[in-house]
Image (cartoon, rainbow, N blue to C red):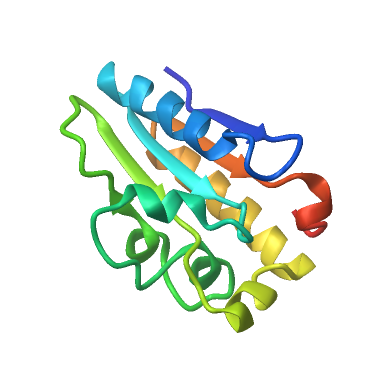
Length: 135
């Protein structure tokens, strides 16, 4: 099966896009797929709430060159036949700002492409366009 990459975009913040992205990923992992979810909605940092541990290296560290993809992935605590790995946004304002540059947006695209080579599915929780124009 070819890797599938899907971006889910909410019309506004707080409408449930992060939850929908997580549920889609969990559904795929229940079928045995290896799934990665990227949290590109830096402002809400909602994906981190679904982890049961502290997030030290996140997607903003990944796109600013401070972490590798392996370091920024966290396995979801649910027991599933497949893997559900999250790349959450959880950073201080300064790094969030550096993560919103056009260069960081390009690096995020590169990391999504790299993840698609090693996983069955890649999902991206994307903010409304006005939230991060670089994406």
